[in-house]
Image 1: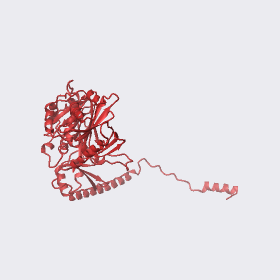
Image 2 (image 1 turned 90 degrees about the vertical axis):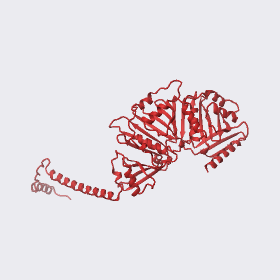
Image 3 (image 1 turned 180 degrees about the horizontal axis):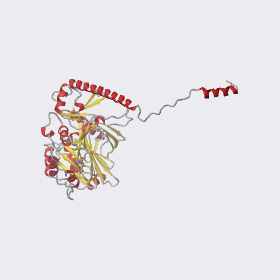
Image 4 (image 1 turned 90 degrees about the horizontal axis):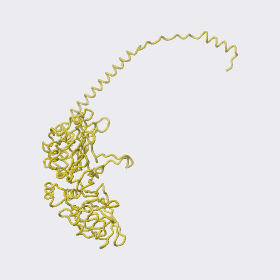
Length: 524
């Protein structure tokens, strides 16, 4: 729209002279009008708070009336009453069997843990409302090993103790095997408060349940009794203990007394048979388990006690360098699918006769008809074995001599290394390069000479009952590639490159077939 200049000027003058003048608003004082608003908000908060309290009271009354849910609300810093849990789980919800009883109960930050006479039971609230409950059961026969950690720091900021349980159950592989795997039911870890829970009671209880092949019934009252006073200098005694030059093992009598009377970890019918020191730590072989005592290096106030029952050890290997009793290392195999499928015992910083240890493990895991006599002899005679030097055995293995001689091989394995059992006999021997593989009536022994100079030697013992199948790939009559499939998660197969000078390569196939068929017949 176009306007003449005069009209435009007149309009502008009219707006300046005739429009309504603006009246300035009075300034608000600081805080003016906020008091009424705060009072209104406080009234609303009180109203909602009262409503929430009423709803909480109704929920508590409903839970009390239905006799469920009240046990999960207890303080997580204290153990729970096992008697109340036992009565609750026998009535509603009826989770426990008629002859099953709850003996220990603990409440964590999110999970409640119950130790019953037949299983390890976990109660996990599921969902935001907490009305859904997930119950996970682990039978005691599925527990392959356990670990308890003591804490003697006496600091208010550090009161945590731990317990860990390994099972034969499957772990969580993640997102279809593409994500990060999680232990899930394969390895369970529990945190406790050292001020309110005696971790040694938990250690004794787990030993009573897991060291027996047929757990059942209630444990003795002494297992659940408080541990009482302990030796505050046990960790320092383990760390600073020094052996004489001619000593291999620790004083079994002294260690046995400390583990019974001061640490309160061994069962009444359990005794230490052999014990070896490695650095600040100790490896003890008792009559029921392998017990590893790991002292924290810095503070020496925390100690881990790891226990693996013998009847859950399905295979083992031993390695030594230079001499039989120096620079030794053991490897134990279990059915666990997580971090206990292979468990290494490092004895490189100490002295330990691997021949003596292998013989003991063979008796306890594979079995021997004279096991009681052998164990009595081990307890009464802790002197080091007088076996020939390792160099003579390695020289025989790496030489061009007739290593297929069954009689000579059996004599070597009884005199040089003393690894064979009393009722064990060699049946076939096959060379594989500088190594040999021995088939006995109870196991497969793979003798592996390592290194350029052959100063390191390893023995791998595979019980025949763990062999699930085999493959023999022949190339003529003297050479074959043999693959033995096993039921061991940490060693699923054993590969051999066999070169036979005497006989036929099909003797390997025949030997494995007879061993596998015999194992299946014994199993059935």
